[in-house]
Length: 90
Image 1 (cartoon, helix red, strand yellow):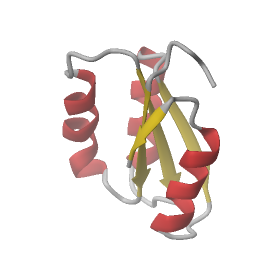
Image 2 (tube, rainbow, N blue to C red; image 1 turned 45 degrees about the vertical axis):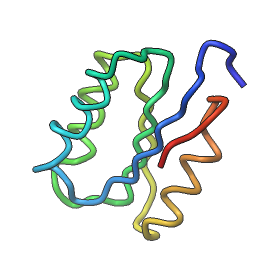
Image 3 (cartoon, rainbow, N blue to C red; image 1 turned 180 degrees about the horizontal axis):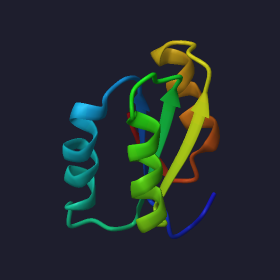
């Protein structure tokens, strides 16, 4: 567990390209900055993974994981396995 990361935000992603910019930007605009955003792409067939990767390249707090489509529960579990925060939001 990383002591600098207080909150892990786990966001499962599946074919969400039209919502991702707004969702990720909303988290980045929060005043609390000691968080990590874990984006788990669940086998999207649109540009969701590319959008996630673009944000991760610009912000070291964002981590992207990709898996074959297994459903939202499996994607959320993957995020929980990778998180380093003291608390989580999903």
